[in-house]
Length: 232
Image (cartoon, rainbow, N blue to C red):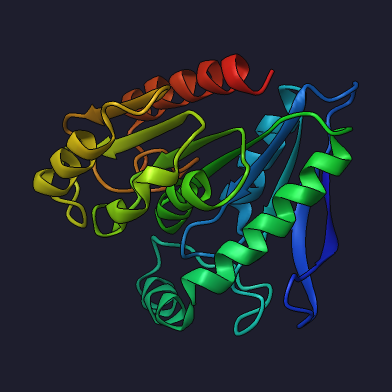
């Protein structure tokens, strides 16, 4: 359904490869899909295709393009999982956020100046939160984003709706972190946070060992409704 394009980086360092899936009809809006640490793999492309099927322009930028362009890794393969951990150590959050900002602009242009939402997973879940604090995204959704509790000092800048999903049995994100996030953000207009008991980190993956069907279905239904409410 999609194709790969190049988006000019804000810092002039080159072109950001991005997977784009277009809806068949006039777009309702646009969604920027933010990757996990495994690159723009088949799972992330499938997420973009799903949004296009719902009527949105969907763009997934390759945030690792500066040091691991085109990497596609499988979290169920131990060697590839370790490679993903190594890649994320090379990733600069501020540079990545600049790439997301220019992708939001591209998405807005392709959607005919309609609203843009951001939906991210794992690493992308944290970046979706930062998109709510640093960009003009009209709504943001983060799935099991680690490290958000370390970035709560940026919460004052949030002005648009934000939804966060967390696993109840997450080996990477403890309940104390989730509680701190909820306490800091609970008064933000349009903020919603959900915890899925028994689900582990990565529960909304499209396939593989991490997927928890019940939790993924519920979270995705909530996300679609949230995006429809705030993006169109």
